[in-house]
Length: 390
Figure 1: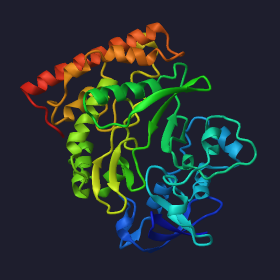
Figure 2 (figure 1 turned 90 degrees about the horizontal axis):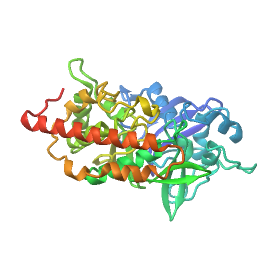
Figure 3 (figure 1 turned 180 degrees about the vertical axis):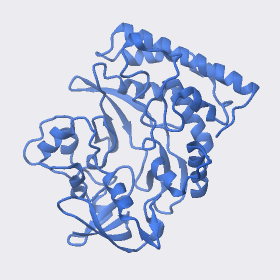
Figure 4 (figure 1 turned 60 degrees about the vertical axis):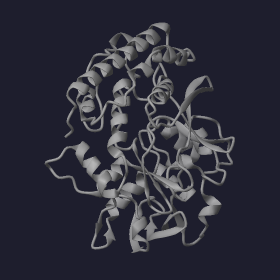
């Protein structure tokens, strides 16, 4: 079927989508080159179809999503990519969508920022009964990540609800801890709270993207220029930010590295941080507030195996946190006294959990205090001899 890739009301390019496979079968005329997705490979003015298909399929629910197989059976859909055209490819993370030439609609009448949407897909992903009269008009069709999640509307706000995993269901509480630390250190962040639904803890945060902005993942940002073999992944990302005109990238990355060090965040991959731009003017506003910190604080490690002084795994620039924090160009902004009592606040957050026992809560609080002391030591060393990047 023939479609036009749209960016709000701006037509970007013509293309055909295979109705059975859900993939882009053909690329037609490029109408507005400036509004093409960031990082798109273009040769002689023609977008790379493989790259565009990767971008398109990347909007779909990933195959790793918990509960996906059962949800697809409930929704009577064979593949998550086939859900994309059911909602025009619309998202609550950016303003790209596809308009069918056979049944054209207007962005103002269908976008999820101004219009209501079905919760059927989200409820199916959480294993809820949704009956037979199913609507697939949902931003959950374009949500990323492996944890169960769904979008809801509460008090006219678009809110992302996300679950936990394993026997301790710790991720929602880690999100709340990240919020507390970021608030104390004045780090721009998406604030999370913990709620219970169906006996399970969930994290909830308000969408920080609006009808006039796009979230562009770091994965697409690093595609803005070819990486030279002599420079590091960190420097390549910073160089791409400079090329695109994204302001204050170094400062924002310093904050992210420090927060992830404290949390021992294991999963800060290139698709869970990025930058925000104005969807109308294409002006870059800066890196996005920090979000998605759930896979941290030894969330899947038995309590007796938690080693706070260990050099834990990190992403995306270095393999361990002690190596990655050395990339920070400035640590002088870190207010260690502001973190006093953070263990008590974390304990209060975790007391809501019916899945973590007292022993685990105590070990995690001790581990958090240890990470604060380690960061303080790094700050002292940095003040004597500032770290170098590369």
